[in-house]
Each structure stands twice: as structure tokens, then as C-alpha cells.
Length: 195
Image 1: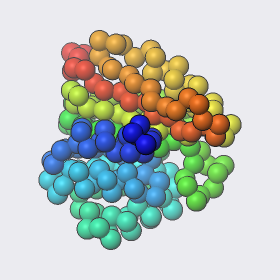
Image 2: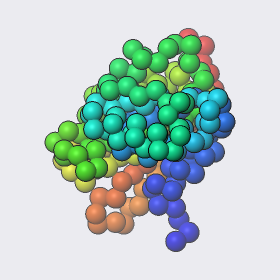
Image 3: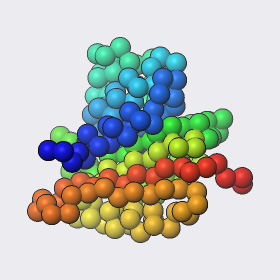
């Protein structure tokens, strides 16, 4: 297959955006795979901030990072991503190279604990000012369940309102699949705006 599937596509974006010494965000650490990827990319001089509301997710991510000797460059918060600015200092505004959200529920976890459009949008609004020029925010939207469909609709409506002179917004998805394949939305900061 020449067209990249969703996860390889997001990996390729992270590899382009994140360098050694970068600052990155995993807004939904889940089982830790994106956190591990980001920690490997930023290296020991960079840093990753990770968020999740579930203790299981924080524990699984901590163990994965420890087993790959990547724990030192990661700070994990057992907190919703909508509390981003309560945890990440404002000194990082304009310095974050990448942020990623994997939306829906924790794979292998309780399917009734799902991300919510209101808190996801609140988190996006807080993170966008922290992005560096050419920094990216990736939303991987799993919409094969009712809550996911609601979140997809709200997020697509929201990202269409982002000013084109400040952000590029891309939607990447397979449109002929019968199984509600996940879609990706990528927001890239075009330039820093004076506020």
C-alpha cells in the first residue's frame, strides 16, 4: 500500500516536527505508545508532558517508558488535558513542536470512559498558543461509537473556525471504508501572532 494508514501517517508527521531537544505534548497518553515515540524523538535534552485521567494509563505509560530508559524526559499528569495550563508553565508558550491526541477510549480499558468534545476543545484552545511556528497539533479521532461521532462532529466544526492566516488545518481520512476508520486532523501554526 502506497497511501499511509492513519498511524504511520501521524508517526511521519511527528518525525518531521520533533527534533532532539524539542518540547512535545501527549494529551491522551493511553498505553504510552505516542509518549514513548515522542520521548525517543526529543531525546534527553528535550521534554514530553503527558496527560491522562486514568490511573491505568499513567501506570502503563510509566512502565513502558521505564523499560525503554525514557522516563527522565517525560512528566506525566493524572489530569484531564483541559487542565493543560495548570500544569505546563507559560514559559513554554511558542516552544512546543508537537501535541497529539488519540481520542475515544483507552484500548483495553472501560469503553464508557471516553474523551469529550468540550474538554478536548478546551485543551486545543490552551495548547495552540504554546505551539512554535511550524509546530503541529494532531487529533486522531476514533468515531466508531456514539460518543466518538459526537466528538468528531464538534471538532470538525471547531477546527474550521481557526483563522487561515494563523493555522493550516488538514483532514486526512479514508472515505470508502465501511468500519468507521479513524481520521486525522492536523493543525500547523503558521506564525506567531502578537496578542
